[in-house]
Image (cartoon, rainbow, N blue to C red; front, top):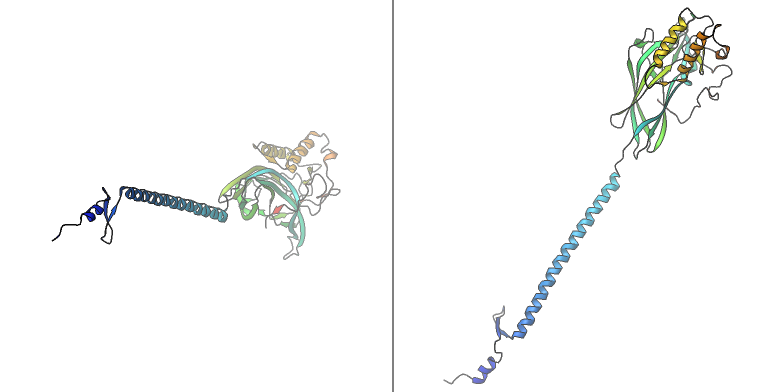
Length: 348
């Protein structure tokens, strides 16, 4: 048996401090230190590349997720829109007697008497509502509370069989007649009335007796208006002093003036002055032009030694609810009658 080949042994040992590696196939591979360093460097680059790839992938995933979230939020806003809020307030309130109230006239002494349709004058409450906000305000209910309701003294006994029925939006019930003075009560009516965002609108309310016998004296009242809106919120307006036309040919309003009997019943003028004075003492009162005119007319009448000054006597016309404006006065043109705005909302 011969000795090992010395040349082969030298060849195998030519690599000196070579590193021995075993492959997956079981082969033994010798690598020089330089080759080992190159492979380690390569492996480091591979590991760094993989780590950077993972970081980039994670970053891209976060960005994509954020974009999807932002897109979802945008879609939600597009569907629902920004939060809308209303801010309903009364910017102006006035009261006056005006025409345009449907009614009928008939003879109460005749059974099944024929009824004649008439255009009547009666108390109106004119409210300008403002909604300075980004959402529409919806009024769903209107209420009128009578804090006081009492008949004025007519100062003259007149009357007949004629009766006028009026279609007021808010009708004073039979158990709350102004004679004797009625107890406080509230009339309520459901409505549907919108005030759009950043707009002003007018709401007109009418109130009165549903049936007025000939000879009735005008009534004087103090009311509050309450508007329910936007899910139960309440807007209170008032107090407001109102007077109606009555149906007495000797005592009735005509614009801002009044017809008063030349020879009124004893104490009548003083009683009416007292009643009007008590009403006008109400704090923060909105006074209708007819109530203010009545106060002036009564005091002028009392101060005049010969009775009512001629300048305060209106032209004669059928007592209210008047079917026509007073002679020489145009209900839509005379300054004493406010212009009728066709855009004014009227309850149905």
